[in-house]
Amino acid sequence: MFTRSLLRFIAVCVTFYGFVTSQAAAHCDLAYSASPAIQYKAVEKKAVERRTSYRDAEAGVVKSHKSKIGPAAGLTFEDMKPSEVRAAMPQSINAIDKQNPYARQRALTYWLIYVRRSYESQQYRNVLQTISQLRKAGILIDGDAAGGFDDGDVRFEAYFSLPSLTRFFIAYEQPSKLVILGNSGFSSDYRETLKRTIETQVNALHYDLEYGPWFDYNYPVPVVRKDALGAAIGFARSNAMSTKWDRIANLYPYGEVLGVSVDVPGKTEMYIQADNVVGSLSINDYTGDAILLSGLSCRNDFEQSLRLIREKLPGPSGKIALGALVKAQERYVLTVDGIGHVYVSQQELDRMMEGQEVPGKGGLEEDGGFDRALKYLIETDKSLVLWAHPMMQKQGTAREATMRFAHALSRAYPNLNVVIDDPNPRVPELAQKVAKLTISPKDVFVVIDPTVKFTGALSDELEDIKSKIGVDNVVFFNGTEKNLEPADHERAVIVITGHADEALERFIDRLGEKGYLKNNLVVLQSCGNALSPRLVSKINGQYGASATFHYPEKILEQDALAHTLGVIGDVVSGKNVFGRVVRDRAARPEKPWGQAMDGVWTICEILEKGLFGGATRWS
Image 1 (cartoon, one colour):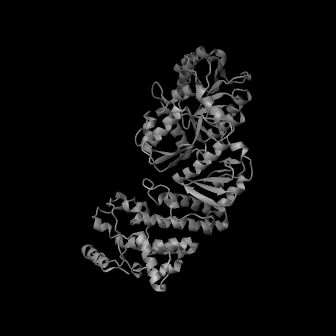
Image 2: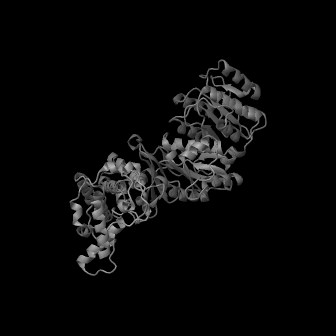
Image 3: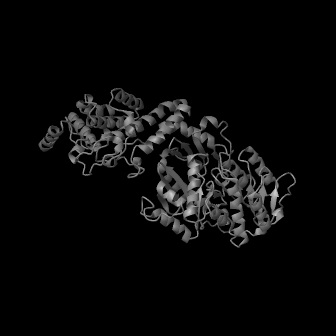
């Protein structure tokens, strides 16, 4: 029971604040800084002590249970049944003033202990029923989850605020639903709940101060088990059985699935796009164990994958650094093989887009870690190869974020060779071609879709291009064009087209059939859209180009021609490391573009192949 001095302290608090409680309050040595979203006014430290600590509440439940059953040496919370936890909870939480936020915070802290124990005991229907009853009683209010964090939320020994408690309850509710819905397979309801589960795992705790903490049992956030993931595991494995590219017969119902991959030996991985974050389901093919990672925690999965991929790459790979990018909320984490995790904020990314380096506070794990990691790659002459993982493949937030990130690096760190790739055996060779390959003017070809009309200043620029590389090297595809005969060296082909639809794909097919793509560096002067991943796949994979420079969004015709003219001018003047010239001309123009040309080099056969022919399905 309680000591006399502690009871006296509580009585003082009750008298001073008019708040009745029968449990000891938390002694938090952190100064309370209220989040505006919580709508609490700033309070003195004594008001903080009015909140109930999760740790103290849990210890109180165990102590109460021991007092009822007699001496029980070694008894822990994990030894208690949910019914025993319920019986040991203070009866005063059943009748509270629901208008008093401190009373609700105390009640919800105890109910969270009960829900947690029910979840850990696999009593999922009990979890759902309890949460439903708390809502009906007006004690649990979902709207509170939109509130922010304060100091007590990031220390296990301190209290959890109403917003965090609400997020915890929802974090237990969603995987409990998954268990029930999983009995009907990988249904639309199951997939929607899987997305909500991924979101709750990220939102439950304050990432800025404590990232990835749900693997530590110090925090009451649920581990999503195999019984909740069974339907997703079955779906991932069934679609990883085939090495066909289009092995999911009907894509429409599975819009949440970014990809299913067996690129890494011994692992089947599935990536799922939730509303604001990406999750990865990682399955151990040997043991059958599975883990669901969310948001920045995907970085740990990538770190292991990158290491395994590097070990499988044939030949020397000392001049490349494999990296993977994850975006969660307003932060990016770049995982680089051999370096680890480095972080950059949205504000720092904006600065890089303006051509500024980001020294100083470039990361969370180590001050300036991001900047130092990039400069290490430059000093050691390594190309940064951003892995084209499944998150990137759909035209949407993840893919656009990665392309924007790569382009920002090109602007702020022009001496760093950045390319996008999937982990195929030719990574070291192709990355070096983009970084080092020189092209002479006679080996630069400009091929033009006949729908492009050159009038006025555009016509003058076209004539200027012809004068620099020769009339025969400017090819209009109007049905009379010649084949480009094979050569014993690489060439550069700049494709100018007015299409950004299926007509462009037909044009690309004609280029490939006429020999203009194989082994060459290709600049695709076309607007980026949902079709772009497929086109890049065709150019690099089916038609064998060494690399393709392309754009994520719309570009203007006059900008495309000006970029082409600038690139050719540099090549003619002796700046003939073609990959660098193309990247620099887009990232650092002599005058601003009418529309941003955030182009990047892609050297992978994305959408079609996995590592060494492994089964990969990018939707």
